[in-house]
Image (cartoon, rainbow, N blue to C red; front, side, top):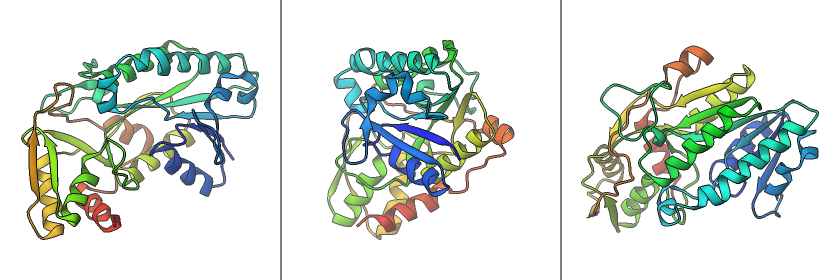
Length: 287
């Protein structure tokens, strides 16, 4: 039985990860900046005694998403990175050896070429969010604490939440079902890798069970354009979407193709949910 701590307990990923490992019998504790409702204070992870009862921290917590990071680009340096350093200090002084899994982002590569980028590619982050994740990676790789860094692509399949300014698919599906206009950044040509949450969970499980360390891309290995996503949603909704085009943000990746070969070879993992199936599932779950 693994003893797992997960930060970012009020976010979109931590609860999914907690349910996944909890169902398998692991002892799971969720941490958040705002404690209560079954969530412990994030500050407890900066105390060495907390680490005496942990095998691994899955660090999902972050102060922003890409859009909000551009409004407050200072947050990573003021909040996220100092917190990470305090967590590492606490982990290093505990008598029980532990490890950290950090959910980074494939956005740190910036715009890629037509050939999929692997983990040896030098990051060229475009925005504040990606730059913050890259700085966190450097802190982790320089630390003596064993770490596993996951460069995750764009996730699909989590519970729809229109109040979070992240994820285009829920907005497209809502627009299709409510017959409302939807705003898009750019002309729809932006092309990215989309990964189902179930495939992220299976990758995370394989890497933890096999005690992997280092940096891994977690990607479907297939990139599709925003126009393709729109077409899939329109087919399921049986009508054309009303789209309002807005300027493309300079910090948003326009073209991304990410290799998952290291993860496939190293952990025997492969994605199981293709983009069409993921969109159909999300469409069916969206009330």
